Image (cartoon, rainbow, N blue to C red):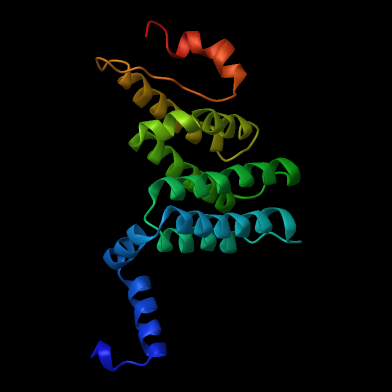
Length: 195
């Protein structure tokens, strides 16, 4: 059957299969080189950037659509977490610039942030590298309504528990890196006491 298809029919078949079949999508995504993954990530990163910063009007459904579309095109969990973090960070900055939005907007911010937190707990190396950024996101949400900071603070606490659990493993050194000097100078004594 496939051998009798025209080039255009074959392209349409493959695109439909890619969109409709998660297993096929994962196989194809695994075959992408890291350069291809970076190009794909950059494309969606730029779309979010334009959406939050360059368009005259923000569209939440378009932003959520960008995330969903990207997640459908890759199986790279680290990059999915990163693009979701970028969405959440920009949503927080958007709120700081324009004021309180609404519950649906904050649900989208939280949902995107939780993807990043979830992956940070799954991949401890990624969690260590992104800890400061995730903590800054939580702190940036401090003045928002709708319980955003409380919900994200719970996610940060869960990540700290995971990072602390690594300290109980023999022959493991944990380095939480980043530039959040507030955490490093003030909170490290209380957060990681006796470890």
